[in-house]
Length: 582
Image 1 (cartoon, rainbow, N blue to C red):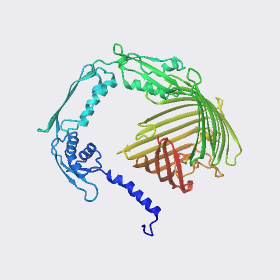
Image 2 (image 1 turned 135 degrees about the vertical axis):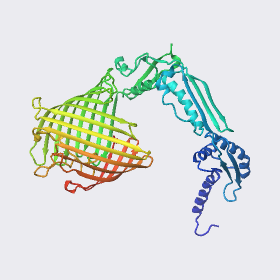
Image 3 (image 1 turned 45 degrees about the vertical axis):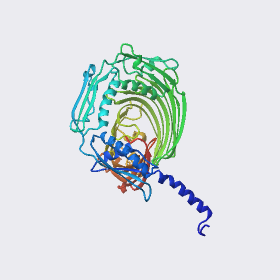
Image 4 (image 1 turned 180 degrees about the horizontal axis):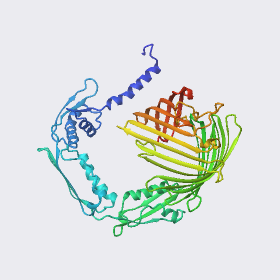
């Protein structure tokens, strides 16, 4: 009979919960190993070799003990300890499960006495092959079989990567004397002749001109084989936007006279795609974005697209047509046109653009962009009457991005400079020289401590600033500028108190991030800057803290900032943004 405070339903639930807990008790690990001294690596390796031992009686653990002892010895030998003293005992488990406890005295380790690594054959003269082999295990080091295996496999893998497919070890010895506690390493590798890259053949059925495909090939037939060159070709074709499948065959077994032919079977992707998305930032609020792409129009690989963005402050639509050049992954000519309407702070503008850009990557890995565009702008600042401008703007820009990851780098930098000009003698309403420079840097210390810096400087030279349209003036403040201030609120003001834009932009930022768990970081920052008419004018300061989440599509940032310069509109603000940090 159940107690009055316990219903039948409650009793059933409690019984079910007890039954579910039984497997957890029965399946708890019943073997524990402890290594005397400061030897965490030995203890961890022993536990890995032992694995999980569950569901055994005390007698079963006693029968298992010699096996466990052998596994622990094997685990310690892998890290250079060949003469451990191991004792064990079984606790019968009067309370809970029985447990086998192994206590290990590791003893004196075996150390490397000699290390002889010799490369013979043509590979001896190949700096990429013989230089920077793994340093460990070094003479005097405690023998680590994993490090020895890594040294041996590094030589083998390097030979395959560089095309020494006939290479083999003539000697591969690791002599261990447990009594003397010494180990001698002797590796002798005969490289054999290096294979070469042959002709690249694109199998039929892809639908593209041969000339376009040949421009993806950045090596010449007869060059020494390098797996990196083959991987780059495959990666560039996959990332070109033209193909859904790339099947590249460069098998050494097909070689003739050590020349490897390369055959590539390409599967074209769907020619068109449409995408739409909704985003948010505290600069412009909620926004809708839509794109339409025609990834290839003809066998020459020309493509075109439409982009649109709609938010409360900004609405835009643009179209472009792109012609790939050689090499097509970096070089192109793009023709574009677009319309944008903005109403931010005291400025309302409508802008129509028509232009072209030539993108070319230099040998120094700097991206060079030469452009020529016409801009017609109609704008109102504050209560002023509406103004118009018509400018023909030649431009040149250089940028360089260096990072160790495209999505979430731990170190790297970005440098960018853009110069644009216009002259009344060349179909323009004003004489303008516009310069903008941006630098970003990122460094990570001890995997968890990240330091970011940002500096932005811009300037406008003109004989009549009133003729410069708002799109070529400078404004500061917002998520990507000086936090703690409204978007584009920092600017010189006219006699009516309207923000009119400045001749110069000066913005600097320093930020520290601490990764407290995987993909999550705390941040503290200080920003300083302003858009001014004189470089010695006061700058606005903002400080704050935030949190970062590295999402699958890129970092998301949430900040709470205080603008310390109240006279410039500072105050407490929340900033939310997303996108790369470099």
